[in-house]
Image (cartoon, rainbow, N blue to C red; front, top):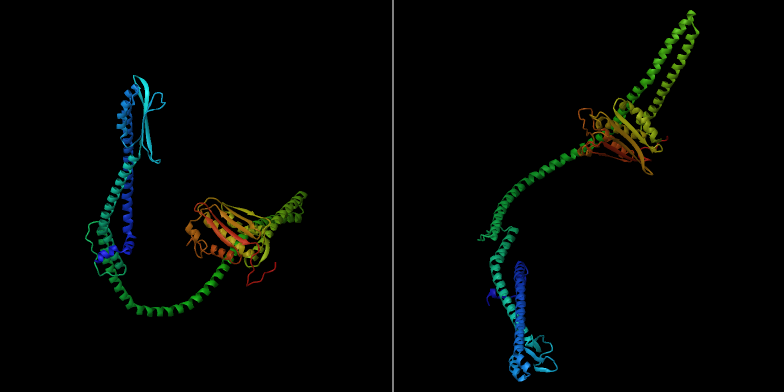
Length: 539
């Protein structure tokens, strides 16, 4: 038996091949042809059945008309023998199951013929009155079986279905043959060649002489094969060059490793220097803040002390004048009383100014102690911020910036006031320098409230120019400043971040958009964590 015929008779071969693309196409085409064909066959069968029953009803009507016409004279003459010939001629049609002629009184049949029918057969009946000279003299009733029409309709439908199925099978066979040789075989060939490409077998050219889409696909695969062959050749050449440089690269890596080991030693030393530098920068920032505070306090003390000096100079002049009058014996009561009044008023002014200076010095003393040490103590946040604002007031006095405080009077912290004051001072001065650059006026609000039973939130909010997303992402980076070359060091906010997240045990972040101001938010515990390197200092 030929090999091809054996393969076509092998059921497993059909299952293997029809379970793929071919089966899908055959099923799609079969359904596409079968559904319309069966619908048309069904419609044609319904038409045939309808036509058969229409013809049957027409025959029944005609037989009824003929019988009515043929029975008119026999009924009028009351002579059944005259009508028997017509009745037998009509009843000779085997489809008629019963023929009955009744007179007008319908007491008994005038003529009656019948034959047995199956109980399951369908029947149709028709009755026609018989008139003679406009008088109703009787009626004729014919019952006809539909079995013959049904058989004819079923036979016609069977023929239609068989014809449709034969046409469908022939169409499918033709489509299958064309599809096998024109579609499936080329696709299997392209599949085999694609597998060779996937396995890097580029030796055999891909040739499919067709001008349709499959031919174009074959051309694309051939172009891909040629491109891959060139790429693999280039790759082999590059691999050769890489192999040549591998030994040299290994030697260079060994040399770089020795250099990195030496660099790591220097890096460790540099890291230690950076840590020391960071501590020195924080200390320098603290001392710079203290220096600014001293300058501000000196400026603030100048007013009350200058007023006291002026009053003292004026009283001294009055004293010399009164002493001269006493020496000359010209002292008058009015002059003496005026001198005493001036002394009382002057001493009152001097006492008020000296007391003010003493209060400022006392507050400055506590703030200075806090700024120059990391002493931990229990303090009222409201009083502490008032003292801090007093030292910063000279920086705000001659600016159009208004400072607003909203501090809960009951907030009490067990923390480090010096570093906290350093952070707040840096944030306020940073806002004064950056937030209101180019602004004629502005507002700065400092608030503090409890967020829960052991955390306090401080907010320094301004209505200044705000900052972009890029600046906001780097605002706490060391040495990052927007005023490079104009006095900005880029260390203030970095130092503030390290103090808040380190010594104070809290966190700090900023919320800002361009043109919408900025808000620095600090959350710290009411009781700061104890430092491992320093015991808690007594108040």
